[in-house]
Figure 1 (tube, helix red, strand yellow):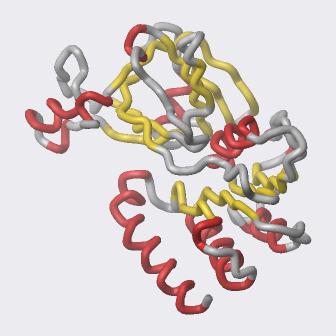
Figure 2 (tube, rainbow, N blue to C red):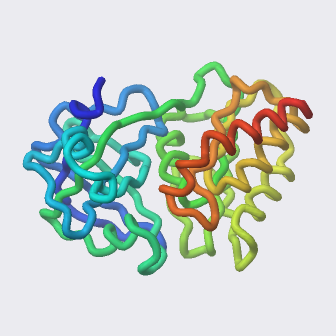
Length: 271
């Protein structure tokens, strides 16, 4: 499907403060007609934020914008997980990590009002819990929590799930249908606490299906642990950096493929 035909828009219906650093924006409206997420629990959309002073065509058409305007006027893209798509209600939930005025999408979400319009491309996706796995490992930071939560929603009752979520502190914990080990950062470097928690896990017997996402350095460490030290086959892993400390999405996406390839090659040699 072409990017042009996949460009959608939603109007803000409401916002919900889920935790001190997370806000849910619920989108609806006719611009979501035909939207579907498929089988993936990590479905994501590419949100499009206008550049100041740029004039875009109506209806909004990302492909046409990129064909007709210089690159410095293209909307800025930020990738976000679909927390839930309720086709019957026509509601799309997107959860945003917010740290004051830092960043682009978080401040937008903090100020969003009913009626505001958000354009996006997608969805994409690639992970859903393997129903033949004996147990599930899900680990990450706040950026990965919406995808982890969506995966937990899809697991059958009685599934064995070991879930580790790193957040700033106890106020950032959220309700979940399975037991979650909430790992508090408490001022430590990002990723350090969740890496330690996963390494301390006594693995259950059987075949694991693992989902590990979040800050790139944390992901690199756990990828090495799972592939090299635990000898988990690659096909039983969904593992990638959603972001990298010190870089915005533009900077991270421009280097992510090369970085991931280098890390994977290095760790495959060690496996």
